Image 1 (cartoon, rainbow, N blue to C red):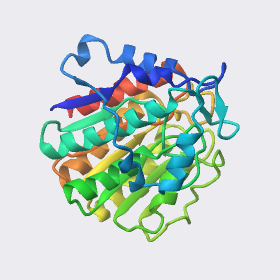
Image 2 (cartoon, one colour):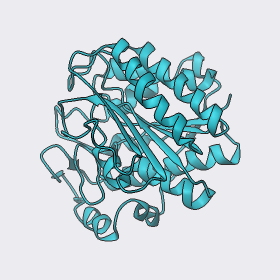
Image 3 (tube, rainbow, N blue to C red):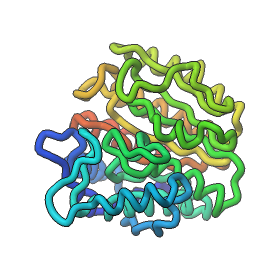
Length: 308
């Protein structure tokens, strides 16, 4: 099993205010967790900045231009109360998208069986024309469109287990039956979307979890809603929005998962990918704000990707 890791030192240059949960130390924590002998066979690659034309796969040009124009020359600018730009933010956004596109290319060329993109800022809250929830561009959505446009696939499934619902990904693909969006998330919680009755064209499957939920209920949501939806959809590629803020240590939510839950879910999605799309699976980091919980969960996820 060949697993690619895409990351870059630049991702620590996206600066947020002191005390902000989406901080550069997140990258350092994951890098340290993936540095041991267990991960010697991991193929480590630097991301390369994406051509900004690819941003238009998921966002209108006016939105992209407006975001770029707000990047400060110094200091920090708030796009909303939670979402902050610093001078290097746009470089990080370009590198994150570039890494995601390279990961998709790698699994279609056969260079990798699967891949993990460790990048920030995250993306799944970015709607077509709205930056929010620490997110500017929707990397997972751009990756899905890239697979369709550049590799000729018909159907892409995006599975999101971040504890916060990926309202942005749902917004972008709401009326598009060629992309399935399947999400487990705490509800009620930011951003307030993700009810079971939000189904788009039948391509949206939400499995909200009540505060206090643990691994047993998370796994049941996967078995009863997420996995059947994926089997019926029959994807050509599986993309995982891998947020690790459903870990019991995370300060921003109240779901009580442990590392084994993420390992289990990774294995189940790999099984789906093996049955439907020659094992092609690409994951990307979304949330996860307790450094220990993030590090150990990401390590369990990547270890499963490597070991099958």
